[in-house]
Length: 472
Picture 1 (cartoon, rainbow, N blue to C red):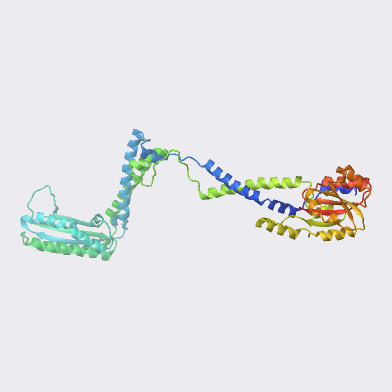
Picture 2: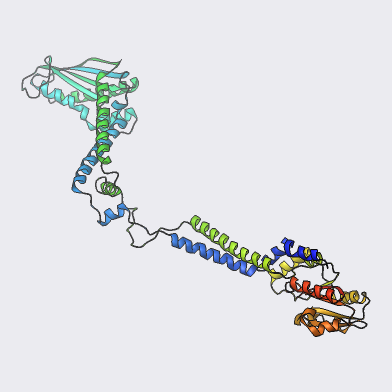
């Protein structure tokens, strides 16, 4: 046994990774406990990190715990008024035919009637002018246009002017007029639609004129002119500009007023609820002490973190324990470290009752040295050509399992409880024997014990016949 070999063991002992992996797997029960601990740890972190729900501004306003200052409420009132005006104006700009027209291409339909009814001329002129407010006529015109809009947008496409005796009618001047000219106008962006609107007005006017004939002294009523022309209408352009300017004024004012309190979320909530009449059906009542629900994704994340942490601690502790364990772990390690024959590799372990342990043991057997029987051990010992020998390293478990060896015929084997360097009587006995066989229990027998035993045998000139590796 060389000193360099001993030194090599102390400083450069190789680690069997396969054995270390199976060592970790054999502790699968603690692995399961570590995983469960990680799950509980992650869940505990989620509970600890859950934040208490704070009262939202909307909840505070509805609960009556917050009220905007009086001067702020004045600006809120003005801002809400301008906002409503803007919304109405924006709807008008969006829905109105006049606002959507191209002012440079407007079809203007005109029809003129001459009326002479003596003292009833002025009264009849007003009646015929007011037919543009007739509900049935407006509905008919909406059907002609083919768009479902409010009637006011239809009425603004129409116009009527009455000229009596060469001057426009003045309602405040009560005079007797003999004749009048009534002019109807229709505006639209499509010539065919404009013509259809004009014809509907003509039918209505002539129908009412026939009805009035029986009640009034109409001496003459006739159409004197009609036609449609394409023009660039400055009046429509002016109306469009006025509508847009009004919308800009409203939005500028309400944005300016709202910006004065929008930065304060509590004031903004007060404004939305009481001045803009915000729908509050989705706002839940505030519960004191309630916490923000933790999302499933967050729970899974923290559970995984907890599992990784506990597995790291579990694995680190077991690897450290494995590395600090100076016992013989594998048969291969025993063969590589000492220049002494390996007589046999025996397994006395009982069959595993647990399915997982049986599966792990089966996998381990694929990567480890095959085991030998006691009969094979007897043959190996007989082949050594000895009469007497000591078997050291025997413990209570191995002595019982190796009992057949001590009853061999032809070779007398004397068991030593422990090692020769631990028992002086056994050492003196071994001096008279042919040699010593070392029994090494994997996972229990320390390398320091083996080295010491080999040193003693070398000093006392006791021949070391070989190792018997045992797994109990």
